Length: 224
Image (tube, rainbow, N blue to C red; front, side):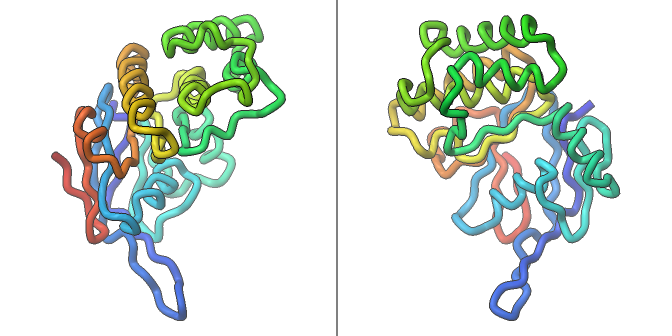
């Protein structure tokens, strides 16, 4: 079963007394185990599409199918449940809780998912270790570098074993060295945990490291 299918997505915004059509019938399928880069010129609606896929925004028309579940007519409660069960999110800014350690930030998501404190802590330790942060378990976010903070954010998204990771410019706030390092580790652990990912990026060189490039242009999608 594919983690994601989008069918004929349209989305417009009311701006300056006019309707601006951003998405004009976008379609694509993301297959299991695939890491895809979503690229395109600025202002073409990449983040909007990601929000729609993440069930944080609604299209004017079209279908979002996540692990076989058609979300078109899902109410807010069902959309929340689908997000919690199947989706993990990584943003450009890490949004870690400042008063909790790296380990606590990650384990908390596992607990929310329904794991026991022990299970969530052990899983958090494992993922942080794979991300080369085993020496940072008990550090607060303020004591971590930018690259380390973003790896903790990735671990937080992965600890609940989502079917699909949605990442919006996850390396956009990092210098080139750390951006490449974080992406390489991200790609490796996504493969190891047998999940899938859709990553919005403006960095074409980083996009080339992914399994698939999905280009959004003029409101439609082409896939390479």
